[in-house]
Length: 257
Length: 284
Image 1 (tube, rainbow over the protein chains, first blue to last red):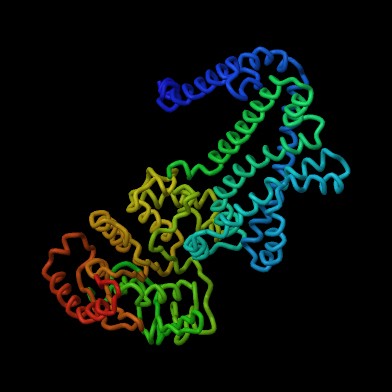
Image 2 (image 1 turned 60 degrees about the vertical axis):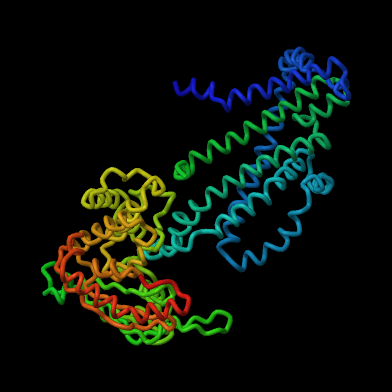
């Protein structure tokens, strides 16, 4: 019953209508040669070439390659970024020490790091992972820092009043109260990560969805460009959904707000 | 007996607070603000003491000094004869002086059970399991048995405040410090919460240091009311409340309550007018 309600809810129906009409407009535009749409493969063409593409094992290897790179860079950004943000929030001296270089490096777009990364890291694969790492890293640090600094003073005082040790204050107060910000940072960071992986693969990759899309353009396989693009969209969406799912599991108290 | 609740039936050997000539000067950016000026208060063990005063009169400053959140500029505060706050020494906050905060400070990320069991676990006085059992028992005793696995934001404000009192009690503090705990409540919820606090007090007889700006609340709850003036914060007058315990809302219609009410309103009238003229918030 609940499932049925969700499927046929006004929100879902409107979403389906808008996607279908977009496809219809695109198909019509492509067939009737309206403006630049004439140069873009029609949805029907994309769908008919889809079977061949997804039967080719290489397509799925590209999915895996991109996912693997995203996972590497993203996890590295969490492992380094979360403790760094927390440490900056906890220790004024450390904050002063780290903040300035961070603020200078932060505005540099991750892709501007590509040449340096290629020179610095021994393999292309490592340099791509590094650039992806940078994409998520700054967002993660700033979110964690902001979250950990905005802890309600009353919570800290209450914890002290109950006789908490410093380690209790960290593990039982500061960390849980920062968790929502950590997951916000993860969600935003994940979005940036996909932007960066695709661009990095176009520049320097030999595999991955970004490489697939670019190689399809170079090789003149236009329907495959569209398949590559939509794959990137779906892959990014799945990653964000995973983060939201984990976030909800880990911060159950936020459900009722 | 009614005049000195410390000698009433329940045993209350600990929790005497002595505030002696305490002053506190805040010094933000070199501008001295005298928040508390030469206050002396003696609270007997097991006494319910209510400080009434307008916002910004320094009553929270006093409470924070007792709690160990900051120091004082002059004087000393003793707990059972031992100095806990002087100009040179502030005993760190601890479980013998538990604070219940103005807008509530339950940990939103912990269930009610984990909130209540928090103190004994971090103090190491009980294992996790023992603390949880004690928390279950206490919640049941206080008539809150069904909410153990809920999160604070799933509860009403009145319920949250009761949980917070339970979370304080489980530590067997010598002193309960309550900083306008019922401030943001509607009149009905507030009445229920006050009666709850009175029932708890009748049962455990801890020393209570309760802050409010609501004179009627003070009368309903207190053994001893101290009225504070604003800037500088001074004790203007003290009033013993000899209404019998246990008290229920019926006491508010009693003759003695009304006499005391007119007495205290007369006593603070001048101060209220002064505060009003100075643009401060109303006294009650």
